[in-house]
Amino acid sequence: MSIPAQGSTPILGVSQPISVAYPDAKDLALTEQLIETLKEFKSYEPKEETDKRLEVLRALNRLVKEWVKNVTAIKIPSGDGANAGGKLFTFGSYRLGVHSSGADIDTLAVVPRHIDRSDFFTSFKEMLNQDPNVTELHAVEEAFVPVMKLKYSGVELDILFARLALREVPDNQELSDDQLLRNLDAESIRSLNGCRVAEQLLKLVPRQKEFCTALRAIKVWAKNHGIYSNSMGFFGGISWAILIARACQLYPNASPSKLVHRMFFIFSTWTWPHPVLLKFAAKDRNDIPALCKLVWDPEKKSSDKFHLMPIITPAFPEQNSTHNVTRSSSQIIKDEIWEALEICEQINDGKAKWKDLFEEVNFFSRYKHFIALIMAAPNEEEELSYGGFLESRIRLLVQSLERNPDIILAHNDPNKHKPSKNAKFDVSPENKRITVWFIGLEFSEHATSLDLTNEIQRFKTNFELQASSVKGIGPTCQVEIDMFHVKQRNLIQVISAADLSRGRRWKKSSKKQNKGNSSNKLTVARTASTSSVPTTPTSLVAPSTPLSAASTVVTNEPDSTTNSATPVIRKRIIQEVTSTTTEVLCVSTHIPPEKKIKDDESDEPIVEMIVEVTNEVVQQKETSEQKTKD
Image 1 (cartoon, rainbow, N blue to C red):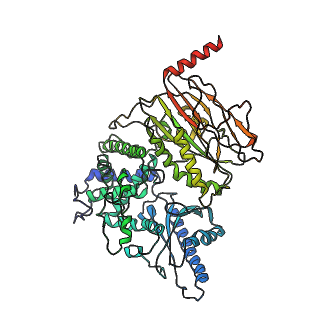
Image 2: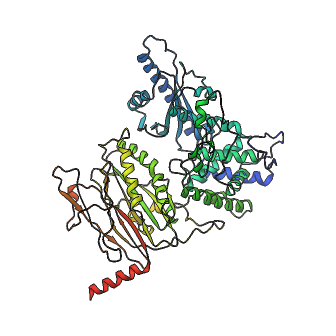
Image 3: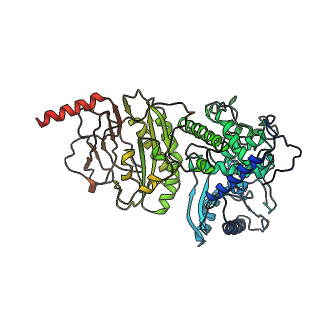
């Protein structure tokens, strides 16, 4: 790679550049190594895959036009809407030119004013259902940004919907004009935001080629380190793109390798919650006053004051792209940026390679204790629709856990897992499609008693109520969910050895503050069950027996699915004793009568997760056991 010709430097952003220096020979050599490493990590797709994506997009664009034409013929039979048009736009990684092999394509179907959102989720969905090229089609109509997800000829796509206040949407329709947002519903404005932000991003970076290469590197790094998911409380693709775009503005002539290093340098010392801006936001727009209330403004909107790591989109109305970030995910992102800066410094000194930065990190090596959340569905359709909704709510459980003062971190893994072949779950036989999510827990040093009963039950109750009203799920849904504690050493009983061994072991950054020792060993006496959603919320009952004396925990409740209302009772005990701590996890809800287990005596349902951290408890238990033997 040759040193580029030096010319005028474009000045963009909300401040002057830090450096306008051009790359030297070392920077260019590191960039060549970076690109070769990105190819090894399949950041660049082969030409055949690119051609296939183009064919899929053309086919879907034709479907959109045909659908608009059919609906127009029904709603405007006079023929005045013969040229109604319709157009499929792309945004996200594909529009920015940084999509990797096998990645999905974010698309937006833009239609004229006489086409409703209900048409999109009915007649257009039915048209897709009848297309033999379409598989895994499911709608998430209740999402913050309603979307249909599908695979077309094996290519994964998300399709959003936006209705413009126009009679026609021609092939040359553009979306950059702010006046197009007039008289639109909130969902259409949010759907249009992706395309408008992508266009603004490309205009606000001084050199697009360098920006795209650096962004590819950041995407690979973030995904392999488990911090790439907006819905799960981390940064999404647009947030990472804005961060690297800001680095481009501050170092407008830098090479991609330098931009990656500088991005980690800038945001390792960033004074959050100071917002990241690519341009100044226009807070007062007299021409579109109704939309000004959507602009991120912590001075006027109290809810915006609580955002932890605000990264503001550059298109009007400017909004925070990281409103889902939690206290735990915020700390995890900061820690990962610190570690990445260390590795980049070693790369610059010749002591490390780019693959050391991009190598996948094993999530299960981070923590000793996990909450496993399982979902069991009877078929693919319910698995997709219910799973997508459940996944978008896991961060709410994390936020609930964070409010416990004895929990330092509640780290949810953005990846979902399939259980191992030998895994045993107490679910209905017809629910054979099982998915597992994990939340890693780090406890404070001074923790002596940890009761997560309220947090677990509150999440379950709220989620069940929400799920029962979601279109595509409803009260007749047969999907079951369950949550239980699992130690690191027992994970092999839940997921495969291949999942457990993926990636390098996590190591704490030397620049991070030590947040406390989380190596306490726990003893588990577990009683667990599966809940069918939606169910009647169960009541919370305090344990009647101290943990130090408890050898069994019993749950009992009537089964709401039987006509006879005969009490159905269950008991399952898994107990392990170590030298330091004791934990009891109990989850109990409705169960079918055929799963009844003998010798159950309790009369009330119990939903508890209690952790006792003390040597005295174990000593008392050992003494009690010795007396029994004598």
